[in-house]
Length: 396
Image (cartoon, rainbow, N blue to C red; front, side):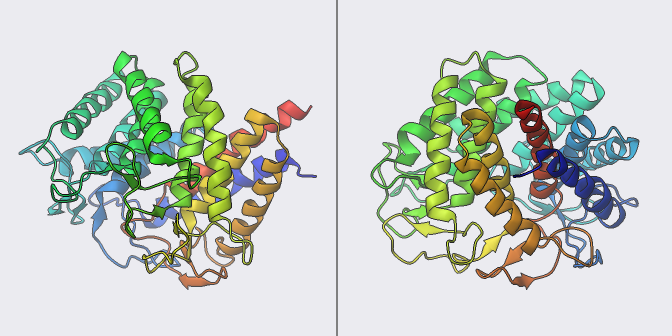
């Protein structure tokens, strides 16, 4: 039988003694500000390019750890230092949108059509506002959130992914906007946040979810029909699992929503289906991509095991057990948790690997790049510790 109290302590120890010290020592840029993420296995800097995603993500992470695990001044100082860099260098003054990459000194390098940089900036400001009580950061977050809503809703404001011959609703931005609204709702009140959660949920349940195939697809037509192409049939089990626990969280933190119970009930449907599609019965771990018709997935990394689907599954299975009491989620949790600690954790250096082959062997050992840094793993360590504490209390 799992000792969830010990599990909680294990997560907290890994966070405060391994993961966060690694990024404070090797990633926090004490010369120019901000966070450097392109680090080799031992923390050696490989590339000075700064990911704008990770200015927001890492600022969120340190504030999140401060709020929920340990109120260490270095966490809050790191969050503030990163936010200062982000605010000074990561916004395009021409249109208020954010860059995707900047040089170490903040010189802009690249800008993309997505609003993910902005989404991560919003949750960073919100979490820092929660940590400090400084409402100005909540106001910044809310104002940027409204701008993002406007950009997404106004044709021509953002460059479309496809030409007019193909219109699509995307899973990624839908689930991210839901989560951003939930995080924001914890530090400020505005009816538009609840409306965003409800709208995102309706898109997920009524359009992106395909009952015929028992899955959430990464893209569908505006009418909710499957796009019968290799891209249109993609299932990303990790995204589905992440969406599942976002819905669980939304139903708990915003219980007055008219759809709260429906979100809670549907979240386990998504998780159950995603587990069937994603869990590798041969080698363990959550696989990257599947085709809903069973054809070979197009993406070259389709059978690899990336870090973040595993961490999202650790959170989602714990959450599902708390919400339902169904012991199958304890079984699933133990499987993915054991697999993650065995294969992702580096036994010699701090931080976890990110990219594994299907059999769990390391594909490349670097600890960070433009897309991997202090976010999914530390967020899991914080959230899983809290959920394990809750289970311990429930079982007394």
